[in-house]
Length: 178
Image 1 (tube, rainbow, N blue to C red):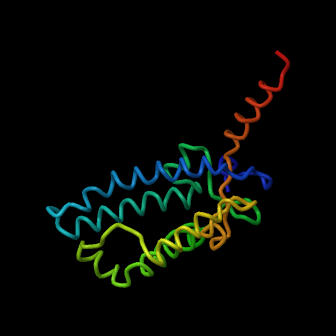
Image 2: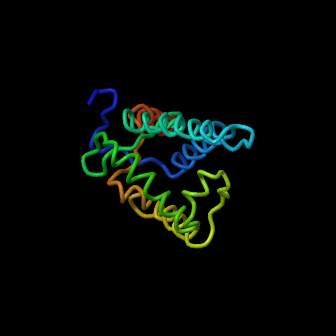
Image 3: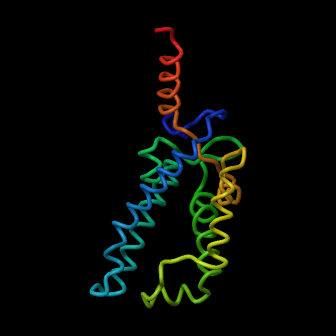
């Protein structure tokens, strides 16, 4: 692991606000990139290529840097909950995103995979899917500030060293007698 990507074992857990901001940035990025996939003018294979590109970019960034585009802009990263080091592909992509989202989608709409291929999937979450999503998100209010998907993957989201340094400098400036 390179020194640029290594976080100390005692890295501060990211604020809930930082995580929310990063998630919103990622959501906007994904929506912008997936708009062409929702077009009925494009052939279905091109829509799948578009989805694959989005998944590859975010997955690559997660595996190599522990960050999505949003997490990078917010100076937070995903690390192992135990040692604070980089996490592998299975933990980051499969356990953290694919499995939870797949469970929610299939709980909501058991025929979702068929409907994705047909391009008729309604992008809403309700019923059991909404309950699972809500439970996942509410877990962040616990003392560890980790969502259920963090626990499943054995990860946590921490502040990057540069963000921690900037916050420490601002706190020292406020505490200094003026």
